[in-house]
Length: 172
Image (cartoon, rainbow, N blue to C red; front, top):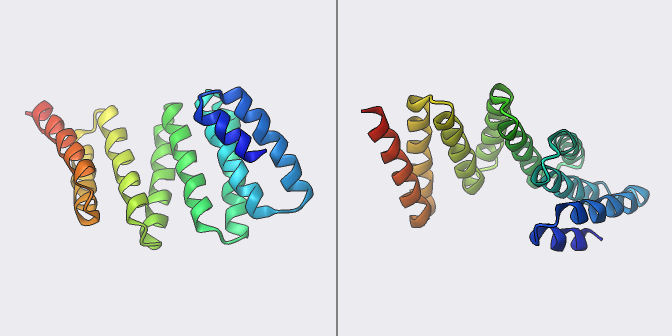
């Protein structure tokens, strides 16, 4: 059922995806599969967020985060925190978004997960750029560029440099 939800979500049919994820969730809870439930809760959060059901998304991500901590699953914990941050960004709750992004970045760095660290830095930069805090945006773009370079991700590094150039141009 979870896979049917994934297929529906990939096709952009979020109400259908939500239906499948909710059905899969019932089965996972009955079987007491906490790890499976954590994954489904994150998938459900993604579908809710895409369907602009932000309250449901936030609830789903928070439960996923709690469950991921209980079963010591860092991957799903990082995913849930990122979802919480994205939900706050989508609803304009910037203070909560910054708090979640700090937690997301710290966990990614603690796990030495450079790819997730890059995503967190980029989200910080975009958030600060969108809110007009160009000095903070610039700082986070510079950090993100360094991580992209360390990862050998030339395409991402180039895009980030372009975003940084836009900030520098706007500032002067």
